[in-house]
Length: 279
Length: 146
Image (cartoon, rainbow over all chains, first blue to last red; front, side, top):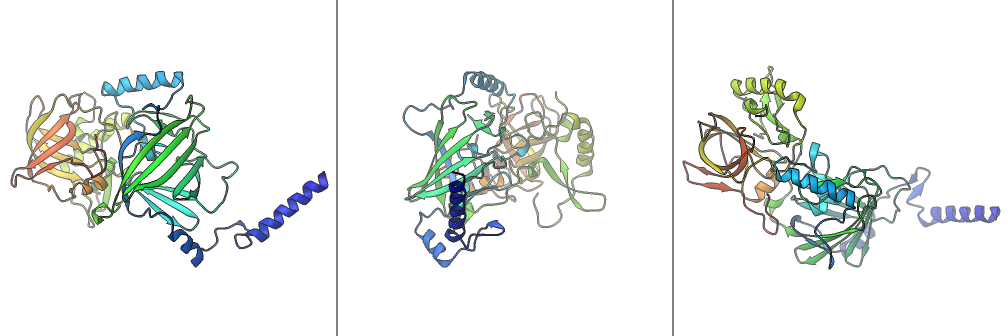
């Protein structure tokens, strides 16, 4: 038994070397340079170019409810947060300008996205968070065994005919599951997100998303978001740094251009300097 | 204002006020930049004339800073009027960082802060000299910002 296990391991190592000899060497797996054939292969994929503006959120599948199916404890917290928001004491899922992460970057964002399809990967850029960046690997690699947790997680994708199917794990437990622009709760760990991204018309993109968050949801949350394509250059992405609005332009004593922080209220509204103290 | 060259200096009075305010406010100053607009009261809309100090053309929300005389129960002074979105989206709605210039006389429609401080949610502005109205539109195919 011991011998056969070694034999299997040797065979597997041999396959790894011969099967992807150009991809692996003594540095471990590498991202090999794409060939003309690699570029030709992706030329027939659906055209995701252009700037995609998010549309109204609607829901995925019959019987789905608007809200994620929170466990009872989470539902009570959500009700309390909503009550605070109605009283004008906002609770914000985007505090500190940290990235919104998944699923909010699909379900909640009000800002445009771009998809760059290149050999072995799809790169998603967002006009938010200092220009949000997601990498979806489509080169056949598996998820790492223990990925470093991040806001957008570790995304592995493949093309199922004309649909980009994406599987994402490795989220920070603090990443919110939203139910509005202002209210959400952390996933608390073990979140897993599935996406199916496909053209639903010449200039319509449909993203179906399923959020598995067993620590806070009673069952997976299904949502759908449609995006509208724009090719006008007035829609080209601009730099969008979330912290820049915290500062005003000024000059220091040497005449250098500097940023001066702007006072804000508890909810983040910018205030004139003489209004910084609460009334 | 965003500019390729050095920005025009902030008026000394504004800078002094800001410095004092920062000293007073630092312990309680939150870091939230992108935020909900729940602190603004849509049930008490206001309209008044003001003079543009600057259009702060920054993400996540642009801000129109205007100087106004006494209005309603408010003292004369500087107002921050926060737009509901960023230059990226505003430019898709026909705005630009030069559409309002320092010194422009405007009539603004706002939702003021609930707590009475001189700040509000920008709704629209009419430039007195030209009659041009700047509002918050929608991007085709998108949901309107709050």
